[in-house]
Image (cartoon, rainbow, N blue to C red):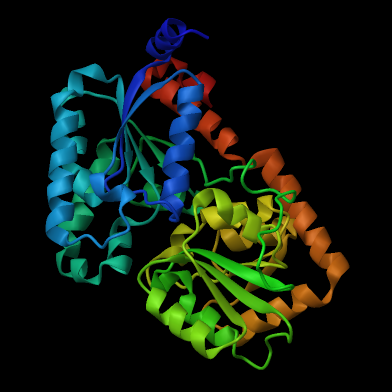
Length: 383
């Protein structure tokens, strides 16, 4: 297809601005979600201009002043080219309020992707709890004004309805890149012979302290290592634990394209999330769960709606109580002791992701929703 034909196809489908104020840094779940969906939309003929913080490619910590300046700069740049876009897509963020307001005032179609409740930001940035009322109002207003919403779990859709949202809501969970995460990935050299793996950002709610404690619990099976991949807030805790416990191997942060080679060789993938917000009401469908399943690796997940429901229904792993190191250690022992059942779990998970949960399937759902937003008469076809 020539450049001219591609441009014509993009004009036919529509031009959109994709705004992600929270920087999608490689190694974080948001990175996979943002870029996989954008590339999928582009393959389907949409012209997509991305507005993401300029520090997204840097691993250095970013202060609040720089963050706020970037939020202002990005939205100002978007306002400058406002007339060029058929619609706006926003990865949900309190500080995207100016874009939501301008869309309301100008009648511009806008979609917000909802990944958590209003105050999900307070889990990572605790100081923001002092501003919970205005932040809650800013976020809720954006959702009420939107042309349509994308909810990543069915529980989030129900929560949005309770919040008073009467607009269209499409449930589009996370997914997996089947080229990077699959059972045929060649095992990364230098790994322990038998291991389970955790990978991703090191926020406290990812269950990092629980995993570290579980690896030292008497219930943890002998000869099974815990391999940890990633970086973030609790990286120093992980390094200290690896120095003290020979069962724990910390690989640091790996390129996104290399992570699948670690996951595919693991006996299990761990998703021991521990949340102090409304996760029991709004559910969790983390990217890493779909990537673990795509590799044909059983998953051990904490008992929250969404991820626990998926693992139970697909019979592709073990569900454990949140914040329970002994239960996590016992689950690892259960999976690693029975090889035939472990392989069956992995095969069931892989088959389900191939059938229903690839990023390409998610991009197709998103593209249909975008078409219905740009042309409301197509909404029936989008459903």
